[in-house]
Structure formats: C-alpha cells, structure tokens
Length: 314
View 1 (cartoon, one colour):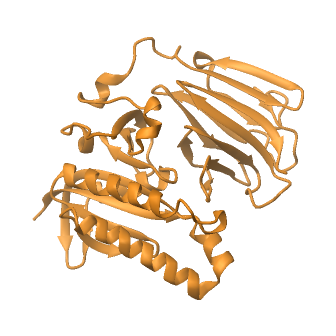
View 2 (cartoon, helix red, strand yellow; view 1 turned 30 degrees about the horizontal axis):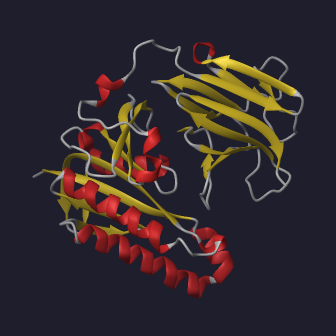
C-alpha cells in the first residue's frame, strides 16, 4: 500500500577531482564522511534514510516542511564547513525534492516522486535545491529562505514539463529570489515571451536577441543564428529557448556540451539533454572543461536575460 511522502535525493559534486587530488583511499574516506553527514541531516529532521548511493543519499520525509528545513540546514552547514577548503578539494551538495505517493519495499522505495527527485537532483547545480511545485505550495518560507519559480521544466522520462522551484538558502543571494506563498503557476509575469534579452559575442562578432526571437542555435553552420568556428563544434551544436520565462540550453551535438556554474568545482555534461541557465558560468562546446583548448562561452543571467561572451580557456 502506498504512502504520501516527500522524497529527497542529495548528491555531492566535485568528488572526481577529489579522487584525483587525494588518491582513492583518502578521497573515499572524505566522500563517505560527507555522505554520512547528509544522512544525519535528514535523520535530525525526522527523515528516514532509505539508502546511500556512492556519494549521494535517498531519504523520505512525512512532511514537506521537515524535508525543506533539513536540506536548507544541510546546505548552510556544508557551506560553512568548506569555506576554508582548497579549491581542488571542494565538494558541493545538490538536492532534488518531490512529493507524492511512494511504495516502500524492503530497503527501497518506488514511485513517481522518487523518479522526479532523482531527475531534479541531476538538473540542479552545485549548492542548489530544486523541488516540485507540490513541495513548496503548502509552505511559507522561513527566515533567509526564498522560493524562485523556474517554470515548467522538461524532465527526462516524462511526457509533459513539470513546474519546478529553486529553494534559496543563502540570505546573501536573496536579490534574485521571490517569496512565494501562492501556487507557482500563478507567478508567471504578464507579457508572454517579451521579458528576456540575450546577447552573444565571439571574437569581433556580437549579436542580441529578444526572448520573442528564440529559439536560436549555436554552431558552425553559416545559417545558424550564432556561429562558433571550431572543428569540435557541430553544425547545429546547441539551441537556446525561452521557456516559461527561462533561458533553456539544449545540446544537439555529436560531441556534447558542458555547463559549469560559477563557484562550482564540477561541470554538468549535456548529451542530448537540457538545463536551465541561471546565475553566472561557462558553456563548453564539443569538449569538457578539462581540455584547455575547448571553445568556451561564458554566460551571465540577470533578471530574465543572459549575456554570453565567447573566449578560449586559458
């Protein structure tokens, strides 16, 4: 018999670099300890750890408030913990959350909420908490916590996009967040597709597009909207859409697209996948950031617009 619960997936980013820096034995100890701390954060807020997954944790909570409080406290404590760590050893936590009916079987759980939480954890950036609309709708944000509507997001394996919210836990970043006490669907500003502007530049070429002009393509073809002339860049390498008041980057390439958000020690690999652009960061076309020759597009997102500037990695 099913039971209603809030499911969280929490995962570490940057662990690959830690293994390279410390070696297998020391890195395993460090990752295991941080995974234990993630589990302890859940249990201290009345959550139940279902299982650990390498450098991640799957847990369930009876209520949304306990789950959100647990993950906000986890992010704050971890942010304080790593403040003095050297860059090569930094590991950030990212979280996906979803509420719904689940079925507990032995030492595992199943249901749509489990799949949603896992997918949202994959989409979230380092230090971020992404949650479904059902998680945040019944809640009022606590002090220093903000909810930001990301709009309907296409999630792998689901036919229709789902409304998603980012839970901001750092009071110092509150300028980009809105407090939400109404359903997320009511938060879309009027004006349709006229809210955003994107500016792209590469070498001596620059271009600007209104959100109503999207989608645009990045690639090597002469007929794409924005060209990047590098042999690793596919003819139509990536597309940027304006979806529910968000800039969404989709990989269309043969060799892949990588996204790295500012302050993150790890990167998000897109292979025929997509992600919402937010904050500041870089997009690498056709090669990962570890390749110092990779063609990189830097981006900055400000109040419904994103600015990108092409450069080569130093």
